[in-house]
Length: 543
Image (cartoon, rainbow, N blue to C red; front, side, top):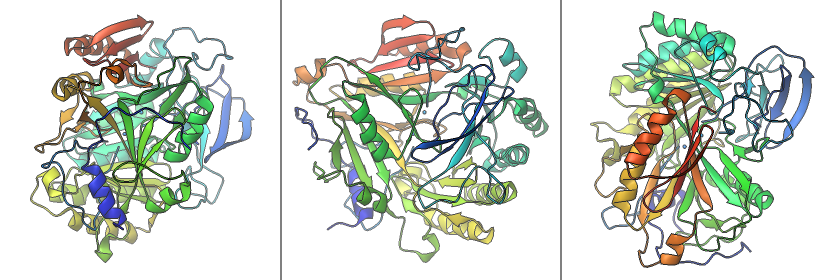
């Protein structure tokens, strides 16, 4: 029996069978939409338990924050080893409209506000986090209502855009250290803001619009400028004749939480949101879009999804026949100094912290250590958490191409975290990536590179493409039998949605069509476009 780490490595380098397969039946921070100025609070785990309602003043709603796999070829595969491999790494959005639809139509309703914001918990607890078992995060959320593109965006200032219903900004920074300096100031201002620190800058998703100007002022003081062109959020949409059962399956697989519109969201807002919509159209053949999910081995074992299939024994299907390769993660290595780390297609570790100061200091320490080694580390700050991530495969030398051993950095980071009193949560790491089958891989890949503004993997033989800031999920591509015309003609049950700032939406549509896309239809602030082989993406303006 292969070790979990070896399985992660092998599956990460595999390719799916390209032969036609007929489908067979398989044998929470909830997004809440504010009404008027009403404030709603909830604690979220797997199910949401209403706590209290207060009348409220304008404050915020909550956002979301996905990576890839490789095609089969002798060059793209490596022999399995006892170490692990590959990792990872958008959320609820509604059709845009300047007038909010009726409250009783959640599928078309858009929130005119920020997404649910983490709030400080009752006394004696770290910000935004209740005591929990490994792998569980309890987050209290607060909703507030703001206008989307007009007067209220002026109030937010020119640095900010609404993306996926959330006031968001990206500030360019020349290093992790300088980005961490801004993150530290924001944490002192509000421990509930979602921060994604990268070697090239910092993404900020607000918990309250009242902090927008203060965040912008802190950035200006540090000499950092906003870059709205960097903002986008990718999510996945399932069209199902059986949405309830499909939702239950994916909630278990991903450990996501329900949203009011019937979709599912990553409670940490790192991996892509899933939207699940009713369909009456029968599409019985195997989908051309699939998901890979890597979670800790113990979590995968506890799911009890039944006997897996496929050459690696990790493939499961939902009630509609949509496939997921659910891969158990493994240890990063054998060093005692990296016990906290897991390989889930990336090297990842999640630390719980008790105070904003502890969170700020750990982020600063991680930035300094990574900058010193010249490694583009990913550091995400969530209420009560610091998530440190290599990016998919980037802990391996053939992927990062740098003159360093990532496990040296991992050991130094673990020492720094423990010295600061942070506590590892081994149940939280998760990686999700998106996989497309294509008859003409080169043409389809070029389309998605342009449509998403992604970057190709540097390795020969790897079909992966990734967000240059690693804020959205990795996509990769696999050869589909061109003679399988029935499967190629069938419309996918899964498509993507891409939320971009309202003032940049039309330019993105133009770029996507110029890259070989076909504009299938458009509605107010929404454009549905097909790639050269019919895989679809809906570009959404702002919301």
